[in-house]
Image (cartoon, rainbow, N blue to C red; front, side, top):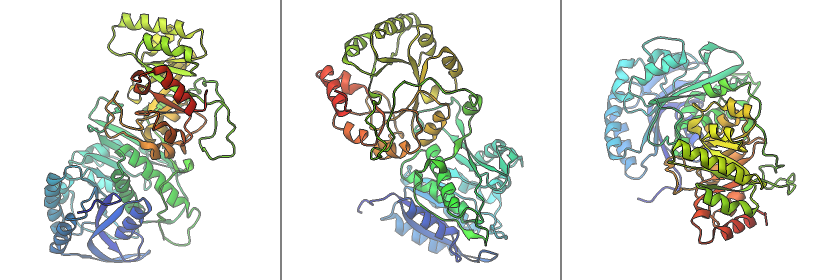
Length: 525
């Protein structure tokens, strides 16, 4: 069996003869987002843009034969499930998915619980009880608000309560789409908030919570259009495609929201009839990306921007005519001792981060106090990793915190002290969340696998770095993780403002020569 050039998703769903929803939407979405799509048709429907006439289920034996044959050469990364037309199909799929996941535990299942057609009429008469065994095989479920209320036992109108109830059915993650009704628990005609309750896994190495679950909410202005037929199918298949490309749920969720916003915007203002949602391409334009609605962003929504680094900067487009050659942040060494600080400070660097681990409080106090004094005669901006209280106490230039520390670090105190703030991010969700806090700089990583930290599931790669830079504002962006002299040119070609380097300097045969070579690559001599 030859290895496919693209990730593979399967769609197990119904056929919409009008071409707007179901398998037609899934295939168009998958191809738009660079995945190969295999399809198993559960039912042939008779419908158009005005009404649903009939559902004609496909025999389970045919579905079983198709699935087993496809497994021999088209093993899926993700399986998207839509319309299940009868209890026989549910029973077969429940058993089959259990067997497949035993053979390949990495396969994810995304379920769009299609209950009622947008034009009216029910697709099936299945009950929640009928679906219980199947739902235990589901990784992500994507109901709209009406479907969520059907699935939940509490019958609440509060989105989190609904998600908690649905998660009890055995699914790992619940995404409730807000376009049909509530926005963050209340009706809002101008905005739509999609909500995700996600079970933390070993892949979520940048955790912002000690709980077993974490919430994500994404808010966008509603798009005024009637061209939304198949939007729910497209949402679930886009989510499946982004997961198949290796994105974590939070980032796949964010990219999917942008994809839907982009597709709806293609027909903004059109109301001539109930038209098909337009599947476009992978979103890159910042205007289509949502706002992150989180407790952190809400808490600090009125906080002014943190002090800047005081450097003029280029556009993030390396080919833009607006590039002026003005000084950028440049090389950003991350070191773990006063020894390295003393050795690197004389080399004319714009910025250094001191990241100390495994010291007592008294030792940390003394080290940070000395570090700040050592940096004073130089123009180098000294950032202290994590220890914001000591950074404030000793008057450091800035403090750097990880995404996992945002919940517990009172960043308003850092702001009040007048020192700068840098924040780590891993993927588009965290990048947008941190960007809304208006820090002094943002770090993105890990670009490549790194020796210093386990970044399982969070390797960004150069292509993803370039896409993230499309979402950047005037806040400087630093790339970090596994960057050496050989890799630096392709990282810098993205237009990123700075590259952070750890072992590429501290494990070099000649650290000073390594710094000079990095500076040369950065255009700093």
